[in-house]
Amino acid sequence: MFYREAGDFKTSYKADSQTFPIKFDRYRYYVVLFVAFALIPLVINDYWVNAIFMPFLIYSIAAIGLNILVGYCGQVSLGTGGFMAVGAYAVYKLMTAFPEVNIFFHVILAGGITAFVGVLFGLPSLRIKGFYLAVATLAAQFFLVWLFNRVPWFYNYSASGQISAPERTVFGVEVTGANTDAWATYLFCLVFTFVCALIARNLTRGAQGRKWMAIRDMDIAAEIIGVDPLKAKLSAFAVSSFFVGISGALFFAVYLGAVEVGEVFGINKSFLVLFMVIIGGLGSIFGSFAGAAFLVLLPVFLKNALVGGLGWPTDLAAHLEFMIVGALIIVFLIAEPHGLAQLWRVAKEKLRLWPFPH
Amino acid sequence: MTQTMQDEGYVTADGRKIGGVMMEMKNITLRFGGVKAITDISFDIRQGEIRAIIGPNGAGKSSMLNVISGFYVPQEGEVFFHGKKRPPMKPFEVARQGIARTFQNIALFEGMTVLDNVMTGRLNYMHTNILQQAIWRGKAEQEENENREAVEKIIDFLEIQSIRKTPVARLPYGLKKRVELARALAAEPKLLLLDEPMAGMNVEEKEDMSRFILDVNDEFGTTIALIEHDMGVVMDLSDRVVVMDYGKKIGDGTPDEVRNNQAVIDAYLGVSHD
Image (cartoon, rainbow over the protein chains, first blue to last red):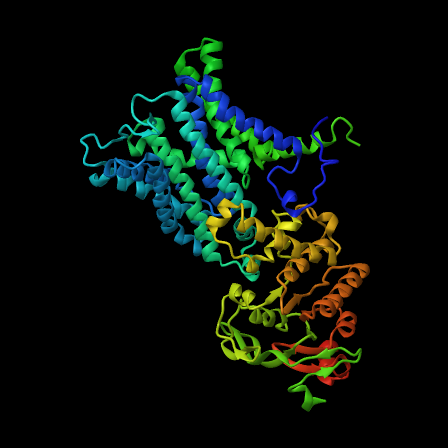
């Protein structure tokens, strides 16, 4: 009833090109921000932050990053796990090498280093497309994991071969290490997620986003109107890897605390993030959040329902969980190939006319 | 007439003044392996004129357009633009010199809205870097709105206001052609290349498109080179016509001259071999 654009007149191009052109959407967005920043930190506990919020926020950043590359620029990548590992090891090396610098800057710098590595592995995209590019990025995935496993310098010659995050604080509050508070780690990740989403939105709605989408939709026509394909593709790899690197850094430093690279940042991670992007919706920032939420929440929900609700044994539930998640992914892709974001768009279209569709 | 044409240009039958040479193709030869697509062709395009390239299928017209827009680099011959010899260039560099084009098979960005498609035509006028765009507030936003204004003028001009926010994939064929023209116009080109702008259209759509082409030439002073198969349209629209057949130039001149050229008639109607 209240979801209307009628009467909401735009008198400037600025007003017409804002992120949420419909008033209702805008207010909903402010409410979500208010709840996320002001209310949730007050009530959050360790279980919620570790099982749901932190993985959701961190995977959202990774999904946004991959979505820029795959969804907006059309360059398929299977190297997300490897790039997350670059972010994680970069932040580890920075944290241990410069303990006096705030971890906030370490995470951003780790993103920058990953962006550089991403550009390096993005170079083949200038020559190859589609499946062939996917295979080339797969090489990045395996090479990077191998590198971090085999070169002791990356894990500071520790006996176990693992890396573990030392304790670091932001404004005197611990955000990494063993004695963190739930609200602190939550807010730390939330700030990064919020800023990354904002940057991604700004980049994709302007000239840069159009360059990427032009390359995705028809590279020949893109070139003829003046898009340099080299710059467009490499900038997509850089921005994408920047986000993925930040998510990898947070995943290691704030969420897990200790990491063994092959286990955490293996090929499974690449596929998980790719599933998030595809299920959420290619070429949509909201879709990245939706996909991350879907794949983070669904297993938690199923586990609670099967083990907690029905009282089934844990191992049976764990296997069933895999089967149900897999089946749901297929069902989703058949029902709506454009992902949750498209479902959301269709729902909004319907809502605009509801309850009088004619 | 031929002598003055070399330098100052000429005045058309309907009184439009045509300027000096804008683009000159000199002895262009283009080969694909053993196949000669274009053999030793020379012609020029003058400031403000509507120049048509015609010929039977496979004559090398599209290849010629691709040479102009930088997709193909000819093995022999030279391209002069504004009197300067043009080195081999990438298509996006050609675009930055002020040459825009449309394609025979529509080459729009299907996943984007009409507005976004036309906005891509302005990319050469948008210079904020990626950091400014990430922040958005300030320079990037201002630039976006300025270019939006320019694009809205084109949208008004081509009468596609109502489909501004529609994804291109949902549009019918005729409108897609018009959006593609809008995208090319948004770049404010000095030279506009149209590859069969009227292919597959019905009579009304052809009339609309002809009107737009004439208006573009008249209002913006854009020089236009077009390939078209509809002879009626070509003869009505263009100031001068190049005729190609089997990669060779067989005629060049005003529509009337070309119409009465025996080689052209032979190419189109065939010759008897008895």
